[in-house]
Image (cartoon, rainbow, N blue to C red; front, top):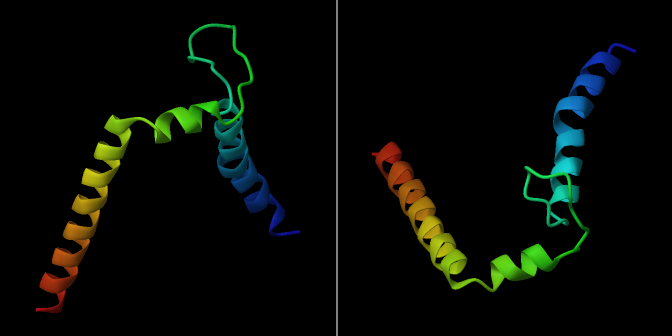
Length: 77
């Protein structure tokens, strides 16, 4: 009974937006118009086959790992 208010707030502000985000990622909606079409995983296939995305993801991964390692090393000293 005491958990219900917190669970409702969590559901409304965390779970529902995650579900909507996943649903809209499966459409070709641009966010501005009223027209959209369900296209499934085509957006994900397009982004993972894009060379620019692969390069950006690689650089982000290198920076993330590098800064995490440096911070942990300096934190130990």
